[in-house]
Structure formats: structure tokens, C-alpha cells
Image 1 (cartoon, rainbow, N blue to C red):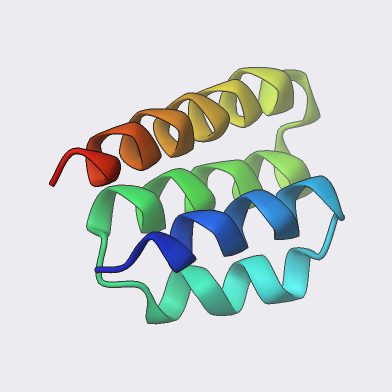
Image 2 (image 1 turned 30 degrees about the horizontal axis):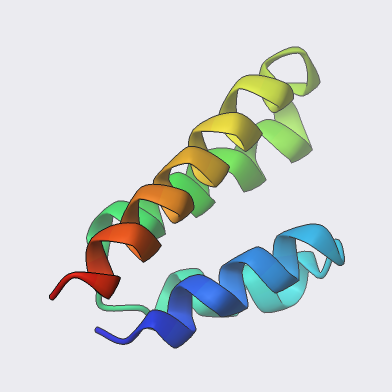
Length: 72
């Protein structure tokens, strides 16, 4: 696992590159990141009332993972 997955996820999320975010979800070794991306994309497509919640969860996880990765 490299921090580039987290950097890519932030970039794709902020630039609204959903296709690239989906590809990252499929190729990352971080199961939690994959699950958070999956939840976000499902909510984006099917549950717009839960979109802000899943977006915040994904951002919070990315922030936590990047901080943790810096100390390893």
C-alpha cells in the first residue's frame, strides 16, 4: 500500500473523476478505502440523500489514512 492511492483518491474525488475513482477502488489493496469508495459511488448514483454523509466518511478516512501512513 502506498500513499499514492490516497493522493489519487483525493484528486479524483475533488475533480469529480468518478470513472478513475472506480478503477482505483478495483485496484487498491486497501479494503477499507475500497469500501468507502464503493459506498460513496453507490450513494452518488442511487441515494442522493446520503451522499454528503458518505462523502464525509470517505474524506475522513483518507485524512486518517494519510496521517497514519506518514508515521509508518
